[in-house]
Length: 319
Image (cartoon, rainbow, N blue to C red; front, side):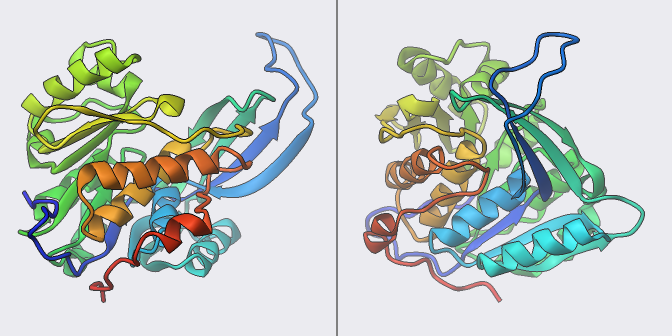
């Protein structure tokens, strides 16, 4: 495992490599969610970029990181548009494969006026991301790189990425959407990021409160990761780099849409780890970005200029 920088360790030269999904989000705004069997009229429909991998990659890029995305989209207009959108946001897409015979992944998001949502995902081409795709990107995993994965693509692709990560690569997993993790994957992780529900599924500990999240962090550390982050939405996060768990509060926000706030948090946090920040500092930055993102409709991160002004840009060690 790599170590996140301590006070006397030089900042790494790498950036962020994301192995993950690319989706098209259809965001349906409703006055209220329908009852079972009921038809309701939507207030609005927006077609936006999404996918946990793409969201996190863009959040990292907007936070100042040099980012490469390893992903799979369909050989269709939707995939081409999403890829171009990511490139415009500063994400390297040279390792995004266009696969024939499958549509680009799609997510259908129902959004109510209180900012809450439910989401149904059709994986499409995301399901074709393979260990071979990851192997082809091995040259990106230089020392100082943060390797970030999620679970919206096949588990074997994500697992292979962590297997081939060499010395000096910081391995980071956002365990979302929830799936059971092999013990050997947990043992390879430097940083595990979970929300309260995922933390409870992994540990059996009710993690919705600060006390519960603190207990869950301690249990998760014993499962193998060097560092653990349990996110609690508006309450912030509980984090530990092996020592006593610490609560990091989230800034207040005028919530419009919570879609993608967790991805914004995770991608921004990965960017700051790649810049050499310690875990708590990176989480504070991620919490600020995640909170800001909830004030806008859509899953893509919003990074206030004031945050970047206080945060030096990440090294550009990726080729």
